[in-house]
Length: 249
Image (cartoon, rainbow, N blue to C red):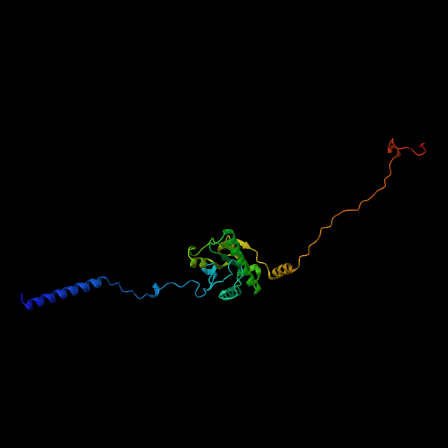
């Protein structure tokens, strides 16, 4: 084989190798990512923006952006953060819908702790929201405070993010124009706490502030002493060892 033939063979082999390499690379390429269309985009939460409520929709829950945050293990609403915005939005809803004669405030927790204590805590947190609304002019008879504890999770409690989602308050229309909305139990079967009026809470607060005065029980007794009683002479007998007056010594 001369140099010319050898050169042509080398060039042919190199060309074949390059084509195989290119073919192998093209097989390993990932398919292009399509640009998401409008219908493919993730759906926004149904509470964003605030969803207008109407009785015709047959939906009891009122969706409000944000979350009411409480102190850990307590029914005290945190003064800072988004709690105030949610409360004010809820207050505006109540004032704008006089046809909603009963509004149910629901408290929910994660599954940390004892079930009974979680139910009680969630009910007290619902009551705290009701008390805030009463403080801002809402009639206490329009509100129902209900606690469900850990019984209605909306996210897995195995994850911290899920537990955070489960610690929440929900707002539901329970009664419209004096009738149970959708014919359902206005309490929804949870732990119900009475919502006192503003005057009742003030009276209870004043009673707690008053000092407790200890009272000593009075014993019923009457003094006794020597009493002179008349005795029948026949019942008197003298000791025979004693001498009568006039006896000789």
